[in-house]
Image (tube, rainbow, N blue to C red; front, side):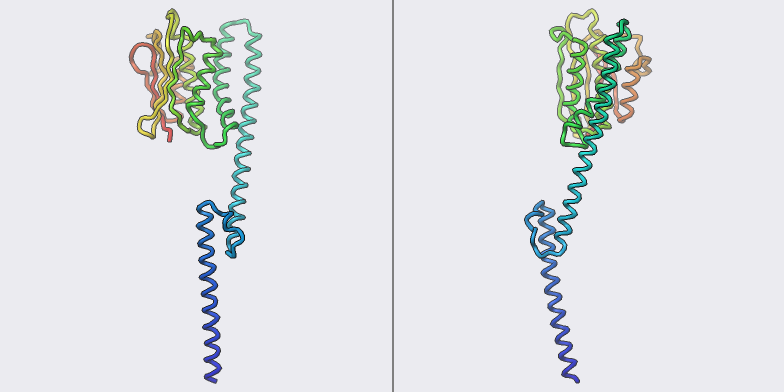
Length: 269
């Protein structure tokens, strides 16, 4: 009887040892597979005996497919918004061509540029491979160059100077900043150089501490008329600038000196 119990115990012990060896082998294989996956080498461990590998690879592939579908969907949204805004721009353009009043044409052009500033964001996002941010410097350059073109600025008389460092920002930051630049550069083009033979408009973008961006829009024209109060603006353009700055929690100020200069600080992680 004792011999039978001893034999059973040895058998259980051998089985237990075998199970421990199996688990140790499985654990080592799983560990190696996980390290390969973490290091981006999932393909290198295909075919291993790890029982969890296929599930891990399949899960990784599923996540990759979902991300690709998400990016495609976001691109499609940007594309449709851009196209819809382009239809609006075409209608405004047709109205401008058929409008006799120069004052109304001027107002329509201002509206056209505001909408185009927003449409340009969606165009950039549609064409880029990065869905979460865009290069703010490229976007602002596109806006300002367009303004010089549509206002038919004679660059032999009014020079454009761009000093833009590249920063990646989200769409929630890009649109307000773009609209602020659109308003202030438009004001400089339209009003700064009345009676002034030549001038310069500068747009500068840089960083102060690695966390905040400093945007400067300035000209060396005749300056803001004394009857315009920047702190309590009565014009739609300047009122929009203050509201847009508040939207992104930016600090904006008019810098004293010759000409007109605005300085804006905002977060650009």
